Length: 124
Image (cartoon, rainbow, N blue to C red; front, side, top):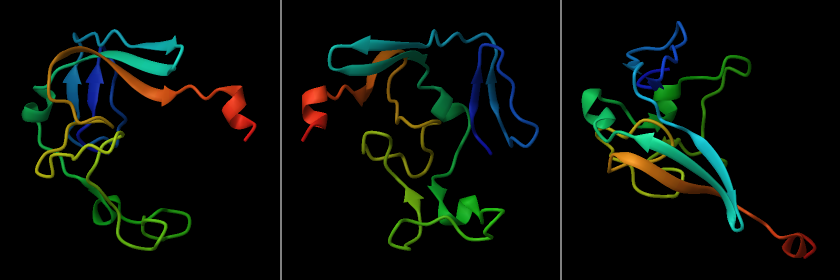
């Protein structure tokens, strides 16, 4: 665990290395249901990427899972390298933005995170 951002008084776990603490930053997080899906509304600060450096998540970075003593890998057995974000957007390989989204601007953003599936499409 390293490089996570803790907002509005959230505190890191004791094992967290180099947390970025922003106790006065209120991300005003909301989950919103719209006719076409679920959205995350949250305030971001693009400066989080500059205030601390991070590495891409890879097989080597993750090490081995405790119980099976095995490395993390892709389904085909190849090494893991998370170089795209939640939406498939290319991550900054030198210093990826913290979290699942590669953010390039500050302010409140509304991000569609889950499409709504109609019951008709489930029947097929």
